[in-house]
Length: 249
Length: 65
Image (cartoon, rainbow over all chains, first blue to last red; front, side, top):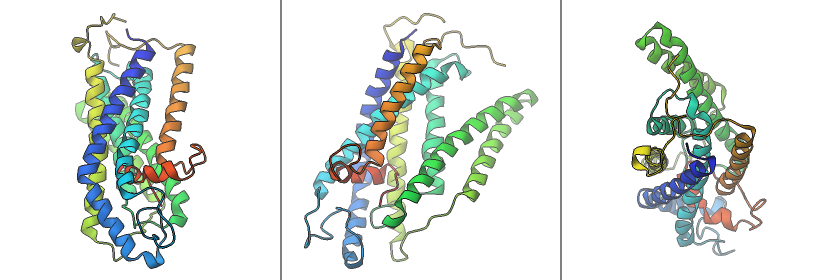
């Protein structure tokens, strides 16, 4: 058996590397689109705000952080995010491991990562797809932040509802088990999506292609992070890969 | 009900474990907050950290300005 400390440290270290590599993915696939969006923002800068994204208001003030600085800061952001996520993942693994009905710890870690990706990334993404710079009204940031966090919580609740329903329906056979889970998950998010306000602040003039290129890069960044976290943690708790003896509980 | 896992690599529930888990979650959420939402209130760096991590926030799907 492993101590909580060792489970947590594994999560933090794997999160660090997963975040660093997700940052690399974002740098290669996402930064060109961020640059393109900022160029559009600057072109229309006369009536838009300056968020330090570049030189939109260069005549009045220097940006706090240069574009090159922000591209380096990308790695800082994804790495810190990865560390936080990896640690939270490890805590969740420690507390939920006994509820996960598999004897194999690596499968438990992968299942938890899949659930986390669906709840924390996919459900918010489908309701409020991320936007590049130049999209979004600064005046509604509080509202958008709250609704984003709500979708995240609802995503996790929907996954939980799906798992609970599938376990309940399991008594009626395998098809019922799968269908029960899918139906409970979908019903939860469809109702939530209907209740949550729709937010559309994409200017009509913003190129649709660029918008979706950015969104796919963002989804890919998060998928990279979760894939590496899931498989990394699965490897970390696989006793066959470890010299540490696992004592049967 | 499925049989309980035979070999589980996690410590048993205890008040101490739960306290450690809650404390860790709190610290880690604070770190997440710093990356995703802070505008100087917690980091005391003014908008510097916020601007530095601007691209990361966008590409991690967090709402931003």
